[in-house]
Each structure stands twice: as structure tokens, then as C-alpha cells.
Length: 300
Ligand SMILES: Cc1cc2nc3c(=O)[nH]c(=O)nc-3n(C[C@H](O)[C@H](O)[C@H](O)COP(=O)(O)O)c2cc1C
Image (cartoon, rainbow, N blue to C red; front, side):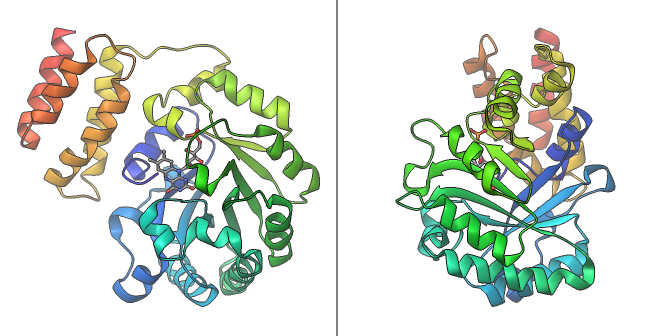
């Protein structure tokens, strides 16, 4: 998830019980012509198993970019994104745009699998139900024929973005027909949703998205099968740890700007969050942000 699921956040999620993690999106053309962006591709051993996620327009570019990433980063899997429905990405005829062309999706998987064979790195895919209409079966059939190793499904159409309800029954349908593991995604807000998705769909894994960004303790909650409300001071501690880890791969001031989005997420559900958010957002430098966080921590 762009801007959130960098190495620092992923490490903290692994420590809280996440079994595997996905990187932010990386653009295939960018990798080929400008090289790999360190902030996006950086990961530590602690994060494994990790899927580095790519998106692009055509099989040749994606396969070439995957090879560059495999050679340099040796992730546990390379994931091809066919789900992102952000306007700018759709305009470039990539990601979810390709859901309209299952044959091209097959070729992308086939060529990427071939390119990664020498590295022994599997190719996985993240999909939606379709672009404007649900053609899940056709999409799955093509991905499987192309040699995909795992499919993660967010069961909404691309045109729906995040509206309505994720149709979990389609995860169940996909699981029934697929010889490869299926990971379900969509509307997983609480640990009980994780449990329910496993039960209702028979999927092999559950992916937590927005729910994990605002409550990374969801992983601990699911592992321990109990509610856990992180205290205010734990939330601040999480932010401070995350920030320190971000400095390994991101300039200090940039990290302090970027983490503000995460802070707003972690303050969700906290009393008096509007005032706290304002204080965080108004911080103009790292020094000011750190001072404000410490002040907030002692005052609460
Ligand atoms: C801000 C944001 C960024 C996202 N970025 C990605 C991404 O880079 N790659 C991806 O596969 N899915 C991405 N997703 C989709 C999530 O992985 C997930 O499939 C979707 O949010 C539904 O699950 P949820 O209801 O648990 O959030 C993103 C979602 C959001 C809200």
C-alpha cells in the first residue's frame, strides 16, 4: 500500500504476527529506465517471506523488470499487481486496466515465470473480479495457465474502487477452482473478520489492508484469538520505532513527512484525535515532530 507498507511498517507487522508481507508498488518501466527505487525495494531478512510487487503495461517490460529485481533483491516472490485502480495507473494501461485482457495477463505471468526460473523465485498475482464486469473465472484460468504460484483476490470490480461490500463468496468460488493457494482480501477490519474469511471462503491466507494500517495489532489479535486495544503509549512507541527504521532507507526529513499519514491512521479510535492530529500535522521538522510526539505521550 503506497506510502504505508514500506520496510519499517512491514517489520513491525511481522513482529506483531503477520506471516508474510507485500511491498509497495514498483513500476516496471521505471525500474528498466531509471533503476530500482531504494525506498520501495528495501527490505531486511526479518521481513521474509516478502513479495515485491510490480505493475506495468506489457509482458516484456514486466518480465525484464522482474529479472532486474530478482537479481538485485532476491525476494521470496514477485507479485504482479492487476488490482490497482488509481486513475493515473489506469491511464497508463497497467494494473487493473489489464483485467480486461486475460490473455495479456497470461503472457505477463508466463514471461515473468520464465525470466525468474534461474532465480527459483515464484510469481504471484493480485487481482480484482474484473474491470467493469466480473470475469474472475476467465482471469483465473489464464493466470493458472501462465504458471502463477498464488493469487490474492480483492473481490470488487476495478470501477467500484472501494465502494459496496467485498464479495467474499467469489473468494470461495476461486478457491474451489484453483490448484494454487488463494489469499482473500477486502473488508478485513477486525481479527474476527480474518477468522470469518478463512471459515467462509476456505482460502489459504487472508490479507489485511486498511485494517492493518490503522491497527497493526490485528495480527497479534488473530494469533492470540482475542481483542487487544493498544494503549496510547504503545501507539506512540510504534510510531517512534517505525520512524527510526525508516531512516535506514529514507532521508530523515522525508520520513518525518511521510509518517504523518501513518500517525493519523494509528490515532483513529483514540479520544481527542483531532487535536493530536493537528499537532502532528503542524510539525514542520523532524525535531518538532519528535518533540510533539513525546509531549503527546507524556500528556496522555
Ligand atoms: C491506500 C491504499 C493503497 C493500496 N495499495 C495497494 C498496493 O500497492 N498493492 C496492492 O496489491 N493493493 C493495494 N491496495 C489494496 C489492498 O491491498 C486491499 O486489497 C484492499 O484495500 C481491500 O482490503 P481492505 O478492505 O482490507 O483494505 C491499497 C489499498 C489502499 C486503501
